[in-house]
Length: 497
Image (cartoon, rainbow, N blue to C red; front, side, top):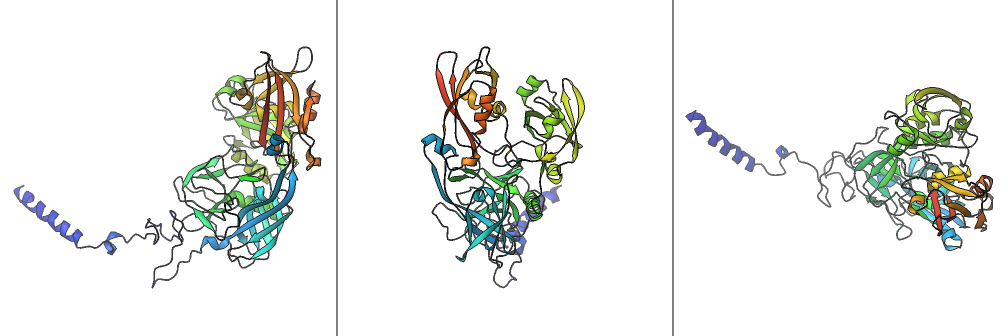
């Protein structure tokens, strides 16, 4: 024991001398690579720094990295609209038209002369141009637009721009590096690609009301204006997803808040491109709007805990209506899959065709039952009936009055109607509606009286515009007060299968 006590200090001192004899650059320290600009540690094989975005050059004397610079695959997208719109919320709020000249975004090459960007740039555009990092500007042709997923495919005479390498179909993990690349338009035409480093902060994000099919990667990377349609890449410069947005008048909104960037995963980009390149065949749909089964609707519809989704609305003339589905039905399984998320069903639904038969197991009135429905072609602009639209967009359930007119039957908690302090029994007096889809650039918005459900349905159909749903309501409250408020939502029909 005494020998050990004498030997231990000697061994510790010898180890300290050995450690001090090694310099930080010695291979015994692991020789971890760092960014030449900011000094941050770099993952092996990184093409650029995930902290400051600086390009990482191969050390002198070593073979150059085989990883291409992702920036070389990017282009700026200029969508020229050149029109005035009365359909958007801004026009109704200020009683004027909204001038939309050009929208600026980003894109990236997926094949020689082919570029992917976000649909929000392209819908309604009269002309599209592409500009690359060398300053070349050429006209682009819209090959196809996928309004469900949010992917647009362009072709242009720039075959020398390299395709952005893919990172595979597997989703990244929480905390993995994700850098957003794009052409910032905060100062107009951006001269070069900029980057916004971040990490993956969420997976399978949905319910953002940006596109009908939502299964996003969420990142804390900041997305400045102009990044819509740009890629999100990993540390090796490989594609993880495409940043997406929705049109809000003359602006593009990139995510619900600062620090929340949303990216369409590579696998969904591939599904969309496959559909576009196959000639955009008719897609199938069920025609049911579903919502998660929370505490309120579990109680309202007597739904057990194992049911995760419930039918909230049925679209008129849809397969769901024909098959007898109704509000309050809990969905147990659909097409043989346990219904735990919309994405589980959306993938096989996109692969199906009108005329296919699907089996649906529902929970209704305390028991399970099987329903068979035949898929139909998905309409270009699915529209709910008048009363269902007010429920969907505003949280109001409308009922016929005891004598005449329409009254509020129920106000859903946490909705616009609840925020406006409307209550059951209040009378719906009139609606402020705008032009319909046919008269896209003609302002004819005005107040319309509504006496029955037929009036309501006729006027609500006019609230559907080319970019949004906007409707004003005048309500006579039971306390004698008159209230006016506006319902506004982008037209996405999110959660509708």
